[in-house]
Every structure is written in structure tokens, then in C-alpha cells.
Image (cartoon, rainbow, N blue to C red; front, side, top):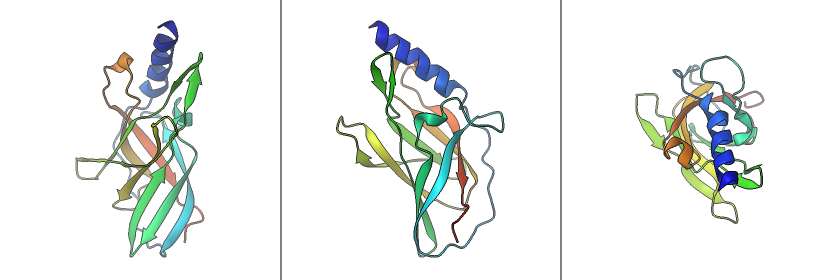
Length: 156
């Protein structure tokens, strides 16, 4: 019980700094059809710096481009704190119009937790508003606002 509470507190601290600010949209870019590895990072909601919880997702995502449509896959990590494991269970992205899209779970770890979240990008955003949820009791199982910083360096 104590380990679960410690994990809950640590996850709260990790994600507390990830509350959202408005997304900053880049100009729509034209990409060739293909699959690209790109840099993604969980970003602080108020400051221009990585979030304390930035290691909650892997730093490389997969961008797929088909007929000008962009799809991004990000990969949550499993964290172990005081012998208790935790990970993001839900991932939502802004649709750029005030609404939210539930990212689709496209892979799972052996324990059933999401290993990949995939969602459409409606423009080549550099900073995307997201909502994450590790599904732990400390926050009442509520979504937490964050930002996802996306770098398209090397994508042509």
C-alpha cells in the first residue's frame, strides 16, 4: 500500500508540471509519403523547457505520411518507482478546434498497458496540446493537461 501511494505521489509530481497552454501551430508543411522517425518530448505547460515527466514517453515517435495526411505514434514508457510500476494509460490530443481526439492504442506491453498511442495530426504542429492519464488514484483518475513538442528535423 505504501509503495502504491509513493508511486501515486511521484506520478502526480511528474505530471503536475505538464498542464496545458495553447498549442503553437506551424504552417502546414508538405511531406512526401513515407514513415519517419521524429523527436517528441513531453513539454512543460508553462515554461519553454522539458516537463519533469518528459521520460513518460520515449523521445522518438513515428510519423507516417500518406496522401498528405499525417499520423503520429508515440511510445509511453513503463516507470518503476520504489518497486511499483506505472505508465500512461490514456493519451488525448487537441484537434486544433477546441475538441479532443482519443489516441488509439496500437500496441500493448505484455502486462496489457499501452505501448503505443497513434493519432492524426491535422497540421504540422510543433507544440501540441495533449491530455494524459496514468489512471492512478492520486488524481482521481482524471486527465492531466500537457504539451507535446514535435521536431520535424530531417523530414522532407
